[in-house]
Length: 179
Image 1 (cartoon, rainbow, N blue to C red):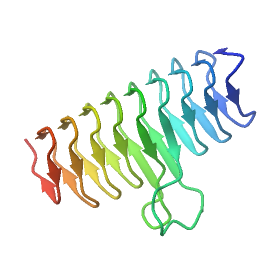
Image 2: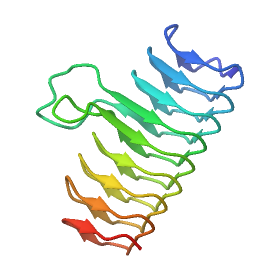
Image 3: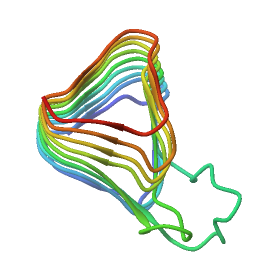
Image 4: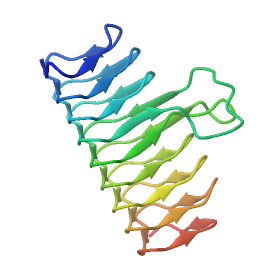
């Protein structure tokens, strides 16, 4: 395990021996990080977050933050991230909320470009690409292999189907069908 001396890692966090943590990163208690994960400088991993193997968290990404849902009662909720995901600079992904399922899930091998946002109670499949500043609102679903172009957004409780391509700047108020 390689933890930069300026990083803050809570004693209640569980990190695999092959995890690398960069300068000024913060990892809170009740975080589990699997093998071969890299956490970049100034990244923050909040409590009740699980990160699968071979993920890369770039500088300034924030994972597992409190859900941005005024109906959330403060109870413990989670963010579960699968293997092989890449979170570029300033990506945010929030835990589920008490008003929803209480869990946000991210599958495997997804690529989240700078400033992407995954809200509370969202389910993202595997092999998806979120281009710069793509945003998915609470209670939404993104199917496997979906591609969200830059500056696009999905409204609350919306769905993007498997292998769908959402064009740059699109504002999706309902569903985007598969393919």
